[in-house]
Image (cartoon, rainbow, N blue to C red; front, side, top):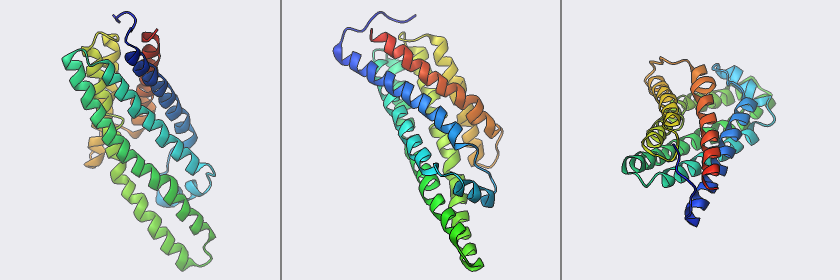
Length: 233
């Protein structure tokens, strides 16, 4: 059961900032995810997919900004849970994890969103087979490299932060305990997915990462944002 209204003006600012960041970041990522679509696993198909999407760069920089709003939301959430020792500790750990995850994500999406389309355009414009092969090899190298950063940001952005934040919420009296356990389950699922992908022993389908656990966690973030907004009233 949630506590009554917040009287501290600084706490109200924290809740309002966290609320706006959580709602905008959660909804923004969902909408941009649909615009991004599924990246083909075959490098040549991926090259064609990137070259034919005129909004590829805009989608990626906007998604990075959405994830940065997640970081702000997690910082504000952790600050609001500081009154209880266990909730405060897990809240701070969730902030540390999402900061690492957001950094990995930004690197991955910067390469995916800026460098890959530049190579894809160069490939399409190349007139000789030798030039096409050289550009394709560069594209292939970078595309293969994303195979390392992808599972890392799944684990440290979509997994561990939500797992830790969920524990923090369940330990607090600010939000319903059951809401925390939803994040624990979704975060644990994505952390396991990212970890097993990284060691080439995937046990959770990639569709579950974004369409299953990821969808639930984005909605969870929006719900937390709504509750934070209501809490400052």
